[in-house]
Length: 135
Image 1 (spheres, rainbow, N blue to C red):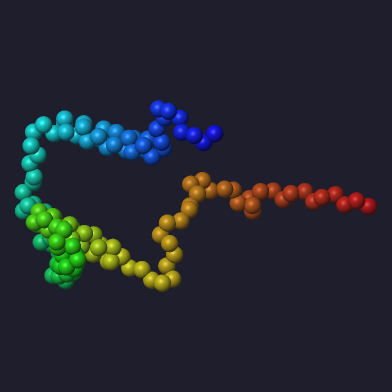
Image 2: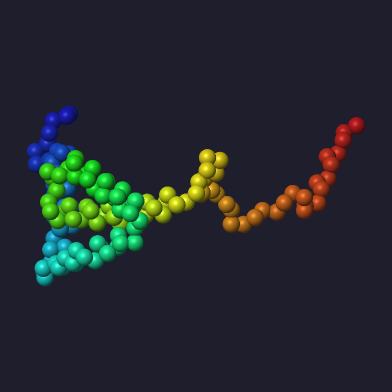
């Protein structure tokens, strides 16, 4: 009963073929769209975005960059290192905004469920008749 049928493929073969087909389908249209060589933007544009950071934030971003390099420097190319530095500086600006938000231990969550339609209050309804007593 559990004998493999002739011409049938296993689940593993099916999964491998499906993955290969989906990967090739996602790459093929991208190749046809980019017939012209892609031009990378000049590296000076993102570098200007960190000029408005305070010196402490720039130092923190640089320390984070150096820490990442100490772990992964053998895996990164020169372009990836430049990109990593710029990403650290851009991320630092977002971190500064989040850290500027004051928050105390007693504060509740920022997200809560608030109904859009208010229900009628029970005070406004006429009193319900009292149940009849059986004698």
